[in-house]
Image (cartoon, rainbow, N blue to C red):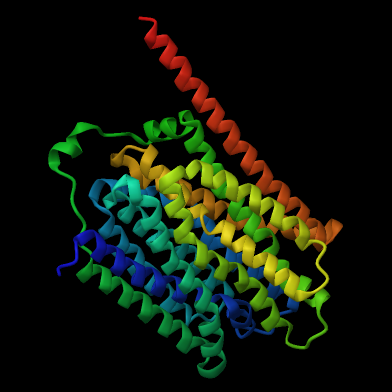
Length: 410
């Protein structure tokens, strides 16, 4: 039996997302160690530049994501997948041959500008999928990204230990280039008819106006920011917190286990949340997930053993697994097809902004009032996101009712 083009694209992009996610996260565990090899630096210098090198990718990705989305809306998403895939592969390849931390910083800066492969694949699949099943399909695609992100750091750490940093960078770039070739020869993007292209052209100003006037849509953008900020407030501090809970020598491994617990929960639940959103509404699912996430963060501040933390992070990961497929599905339902990519790009920008601000916020809070307090603040951030979405939904409902009464009176 012949597979439909949409199912074929989903399967191919699942594999490509897995390869890209696993490859890009392979290099994360040893970035600071790689910087140490570039000179006789102090520990403070290495930590400072590790933070700069890590964050700069998200900053440029934040700036460029709407641009790639707009280009994708105009010329198709497949060309953007090829450009970003090749760009990531090239930048990671040359990272293995850098001799100074400043050169590495510039390459990570460039890499952020072309970091749009996974968001663009979500936009492509969303555009080709019927609205009634878009949440389930996007949840399925998201499992490829999550699975790759889970195994990437483990594989990267092992390869760096056994083969060295340079070989790991080269291997990573080759894998991403292979993923790009898979997209080139495997993905068949359905082009919109020329008539549809001429029906309406939105300027960048009109797209922003559309986002700000759709209260729930704008709330979704901010929620994406808050969720990523919440996720990243504790990540840089997790190893320190685990060290307080256990006296074992293999703290790095145990911290990795605590870190990965949320990823496994995410992997198990992401498709099911998307499917549930298709049936009862993505807005309702996101409201529940935000409140559940806020509640689960509170007891993490009071745990007395590593296993308590691991279990709580597993359930937290299950909750957060529905955020990306449900918010992306909501954009698919709410936004005109002609500007789906650009609006998705703005959503991704908010996500990257959360990636940058989260670690800084967590570090500042823990420095002043302790690591445990970070869990309380993060719980408050998720609760605020819940209230924001509730407010946006009520505002939009009142506006619809007002318009209905206004036009109904004529």
